Image 1: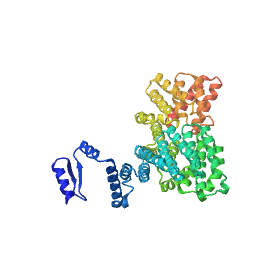
Image 2: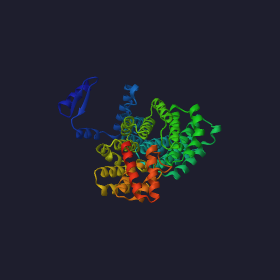
Image 3: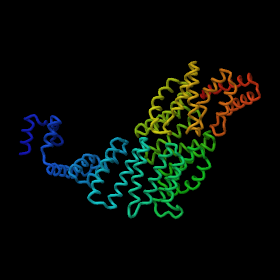
Length: 500
């Protein structure tokens, strides 16, 4: 009763107000300044004691929902200077935020957990606390990597490695995992040599998988080989992909998790896609469609995105635009939910290409801002050259030929850099070919056509390839008029097919 009397007095004085009576009485300060003044009037030891009492009371009252109130508990125990408990709840809050892709909150919670762990280490510097610190650093770096902050992630991963190396009994699997993640970051920045160098270190920590010492090391080996398959995909090296897949697929199928099997199969049909020069056979299409449920069962949004993206990309290459757009829209929604700039850019880019193939310049242009907004996240997120190619296409359609040339040549210049492996250069070269043909520049037209039918490029439909090849032969035989006429016929056919 005394407490209620005091509360009524405070309410009457205007310092607090009744917020709710159900399910429990709840009062709020009427002004933040009053709250600060009341809090500041407490002695430090009293504040610590009250925070500890509040935290312990919440633990008892909400024992079944501790994960939901982990952030509140962490703050109480932080102010109570109960560092171990604060670490526990900050980490729990960070994990919850990370799983929900609340990336900014996750970073803050993990950083607070790290700060509390460092305070613990000042009092008790043992391997268990150092191990916990390394794990927290890894979680922090994972979030940095997800949102495209590659350098920040790499710095934190290396800090975790330094801590591991100083332990009496370092965790070899964790060290391999950290090196794997560092290598993946290098790949996303198209730093392929660095990625291989780092992954070689990871291999050393795992040892010979024929005599794997633990399920954990075998699982990490599967994850590492999957990353290496994707690495060879990006550098357009199908033999390198196959060499790894021949070892990876049997192990993943027999002993891998659901997620690892989904990723291994993902690598396999990307290999077939490369080998068949980006002509998606019915067999590969069926394989990709049959693997999507496996990815969905695994429940991880990244693999669900990757499988949906690949289906959308495959449909796009087959000119099945409705199905392509369905999967790519799903991808864009997932990527935005995850806050992943690389995946956002990838989905928006190919939705832009699909709109271009439909002959819808306004829709294609609506994706420009999204694609260009992610360039800061590195080369894998930077599709500026495809935007420039679409700008060239739109300008060409609208008769703004000088502008079309400017954008087309800028896109072409970008291909001389880190994007020279990109096998869909028709997106850039068809508008340039149209310009060269209209201006009767036979040698330029020949160069652009050769680029598109190069053996490392996606195979265009047979009749379109034949028309381009015939025009090249006529031009090289110095039959300029016939070559230009044949190029014009090829462009008409390409327009009907959605390529220009």
